[in-house]
Length: 145
Ligand code: HEM
Image (cartoon, rainbow, N blue to C red):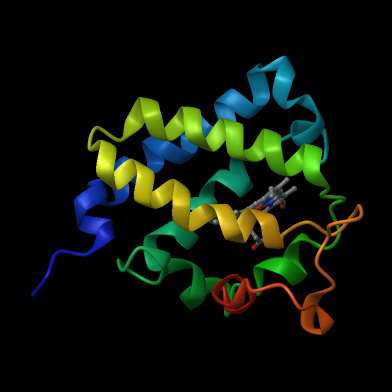
């Protein structure tokens, strides 16, 4: 059996470190303020949900789906105004958190590359925002995520 990305990353403990650091950076960096301010004051629930999502997404236990059903990420992000600025800040925090917590550079690059189109697809404000089902962008996997 080939190793899953979940195993390569280091399982639940590593995902907790990654997501914990990700939201810590978003909370602390002035450059991430635009993304931070659309999140609730308490980042605890978002941290928990993101760990659960990544677990299943990387081939580990489907914690998010078991508890909340299909992720429907784009739909779940619609209440939050996400434009290019929010996307860029989110991605900056993710890149820094990956650099700090994932030792394997190749894996780190793969994770970032896989998240990039999803982040792109989460935009729901601004000129380049994707119009959901009627959109002609090619983020097919992201649409399904
Ligand atoms: C483009 C930049 C993004 C921004 C600004 C953003 C922002 C947010 C916000 C404000 C929430 C709600 C937090 C809460 O309810 O406490 C959220 C939830 C979530 N985000 Fe993002 N997000 C982005 C991209 C992504 C990406 C790329 C992924 C996956 C790889 C992702 C996965 C999730 C998950 C799983 C949740 C929890 C959904 C739920 O059950 O409510 N997000 N995000």
